[in-house]
Image (cartoon, rainbow, N blue to C red; front, side, top):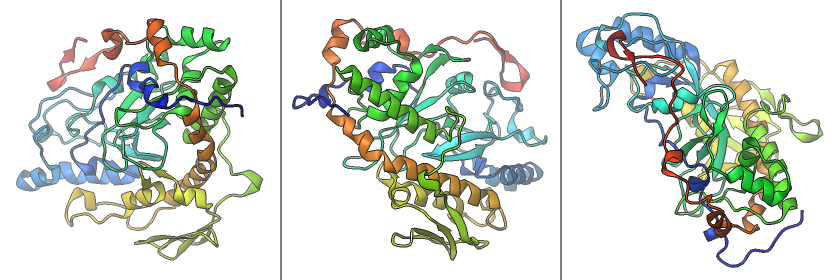
Length: 403
């Protein structure tokens, strides 16, 4: 791959993602961990337990906060058909759980009830759904290994593994893939610069490949060389497709050479530890054995945190006895093992190409040219969510809201 040597300090002058994708949303704040679980059955059991309780017991199970109590009056989340009466009077069936990205590469299930979520960010729910993609900027951690930007189709919680708040940037400002969330004129500028048509997905692919962490926020160098741009876009498409589990290509990610992880010894009912043997390429879950697990998968980190270890902790961390969080599967479900095998493959593929992705830090940025072309700074309107007027939303106590 042909590169362009940058001048000292050029990366520091690379445009911020905040300038190029102006509309961003802060992370969601669930407020109570029992509304999220790795499996749907657990959420339904927790809901049934809560609505069957009464008085002080129900209040304790609910876990009220400053933002939400059983008497909070809030509307339904956009696109969700859930109750809007005060939760203290709720006795109906469990709402249909939805997929959320609770952390990097960790899709779980959420009860999409606005009465239960401290800060749900309704503006994100209005634009969620196919073909929307979310670029999730990871909170800056000095010296931490891993990508600065991840992409997901599921609604992301948005917090980095180390707990640092990042930003969530939808690729499109309106439902149905309309109006790219990009600085006005950026795509035309890039098309003229590189002599080819540049679409929103091309831009996102480049950002996935080239984004760099910095104390000021995620930066995206823009090369002068069209070959570097084309190479980065191709790499970013591959990386994004792996992160999205093959949704872009229609082909499920596979490790090269016909390798694939298998269960060599069954995972026990309640594994308490996870360990890795690099020589044997074995992942040990309390005596259960999975291999081959390439070292790139084990060592893959986001925000300095090992992804596999955090995934395991989210499913095995002890909970307070008697709480709703303590309600979960009696034994390790088979679907968790299947998800783990898929995750190993995803991380192995991404880890193998991490040096290639990191090489884009050496490309030349063109921030001054963007200023001269009137692309930067973006107008204030580009930082605000677009108006969505083609549907109704139910407000508190069944009233409809005007948007």
